[in-house]
Image (cartoon, one colour):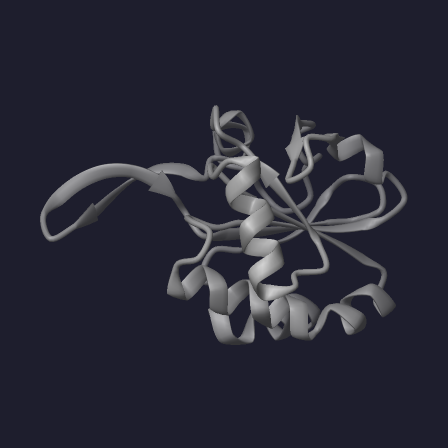
Length: 149
């Protein structure tokens, strides 16, 4: 079932880079940028994370909380955060349960080979927990502009 703008964002519970439990409901009353990305320390994902980092102050001023989600481990997330001084939380969705709820664990194809992976997708969630925007054609270098404009 595909998620659509206007519907309630699926509740989830997973661990952040420090092993703390994070639930979507923890952010009720705040606007949330929930962005799914394929892998820590890969070129596109690093560009995207650094764009969000470089514009983090503007995102905070606009009232957003940023949560990145990939199937990498907590340890991998810690290294990624340290290396690029990322000021936001990364969620370790190793069992893909959050991906499944948001429909971002999909079949991909490269050089004719099919495999399962993360669809780079961003969900913007409003203060009431409803999806206000879905960005599935993410421009990694201009991602903040896509969210704010």
